[in-house]
Structure formats: C-alpha cells, structure tokens
Length: 304
Image (cartoon, rainbow, N blue to C red; front, side, top):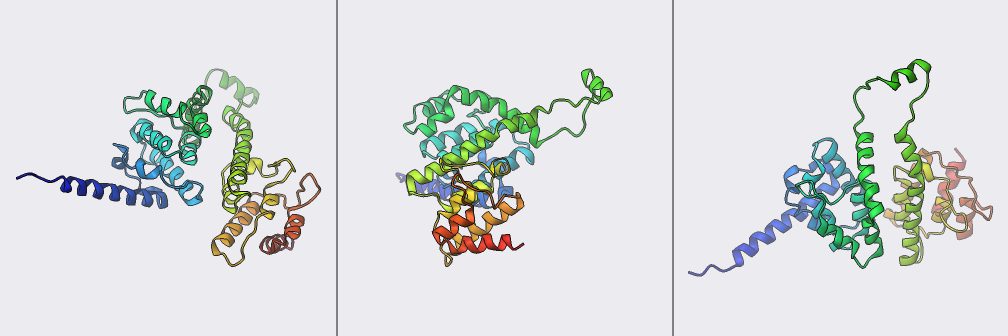
C-alpha cells in the first residue's frame, strides 16, 4: 500500500501551528521561554514575522532573551542567533533585528561558536539599506565589544578584588575610571539618533509621527538621557511632536498610550515647560492644534 504524504503534511502543519502559539505566548510572558524551543531555531520563523513597532511585542522579545541569558544562563550560541538573525533578514524585519543585534548585542553565532558567513552575506547583500547597516564591518566589531559590556552590566560581580594599582587608588582616595558609565555616556548620541530614525521613519511612511512611536521612545530605558533633546529641525522635543498628532478621545488604545507617555515623562522629570526653537511649549502647540486630550493632560500636570 502506498502511503500518502498527507500524514507528514499534517504533522508539519501541527508543529508549525504549535510553534506559532508558543511564540505568541513568549512575547506576552518571557518567563515561558524554554531552552528546548530554541535548539533547532524553528520558533524564529514565527517570531521574525511579528510587528515590533508594537511595544508589547518589542518588550516581550527583549525580555525573553534577557531572561534566557540571566535566569537560564543560556549561552549565545545555544540560542541559535544565526537562525534568528537569518529569519529577520528573510522577513525584512528591521525592528526585530534591531532588538537582537542592537539591544541584545547578538551576532549570528552557530552552535560551534563560529559566526555564520552565510548570514553575514545575506545581510550585506540585502536590498534594504537599513538591513545592510547591521552588517557593516565596523558595526559588527562594535557589537562584539558591546556584548561583553552588556554582560558586565547585567551580571555585576558579587564582590570586588582590590589588588595592584587598585590598592594605591583606594589608599589615596583616587576613584577608578568607570569605563562602563563612560561607555553609556557615549551611547546617548546613539539613542538620540535612534529616536530620530524612528520619527523620520514614521514621517516618511505615514506622513506624521505615530503616538505608538512616541510611547515607545519615552518608555525606552535610555529616554532619560535624551528627554530634553531636539528631535527635528524645528527643535521639537518629544511632547512637541505629540502635540502634532490627532488623539481621538474616544479611542481607548490612543488614550492608554497618551496616559503611558505622560506617566513616563513625569517619572523621568521631563521639563514640561521646555520650548522648541520658536519659543513654544508643548502646551502652546497642543492649544494651537486643538488637541483636547493633550491639553487636559498638560494642564493637569501644571496644576500639581
């Protein structure tokens, strides 16, 4: 009797659907990350298809990899970043790759610890210049260095051994240079450029900045270092840009995003009276645009 291929097809479909469900669950709860899911890299076929301009997806993927590194002690090559990055390239998913290669500092390591030449070539020859930028030689070198610094930041040593020149510094009261903090000071320019890229992307593709993008920027861990910086040629700060967006007071999602933005700005001691290059505050811009939700939010802050 000839066996039809239907059975195998069914099993493959079942596995694909199962992995898609697992991928969604991991993005909602990173602690569901299980080592065995990532061994063959198949789950990346689904993870690489999600929209990571969505803040929940963005944070879910970032936290999943952080959980794997810190809690499960999974080595980079065990995560199959070669497959993860390759799937991002295939899906032209810039934001997904940014999380892996910029936020988590991953390189396309294979299980043997070697970087995949195939993945590098796919990235370098991709038609999207934003994808190609991740595979420039200088960028890859910096990622390799930063990966070690990121590990230092996340897992500081339980104790410090003082010896040699460090003893002299301690005795004389000389502070040892904080290379880690110096590094992160230097990267504030990188975060500012990243915010400007997101804003420019929205303006080019949607004609205006999206409220979801504003919310993503202010909720980023680096927002504190760029909160008072100008983000376009008119010197607009983050809330000046928000004032230019129509916020529908009857749209629950948009109002939730607005509340999240204002909450984070208060938490980071944002200067609500800061002006753009035309001497306008965000409240001035909101009144000019007749943005009632933002006017009310800013006036409530001023009354505190």
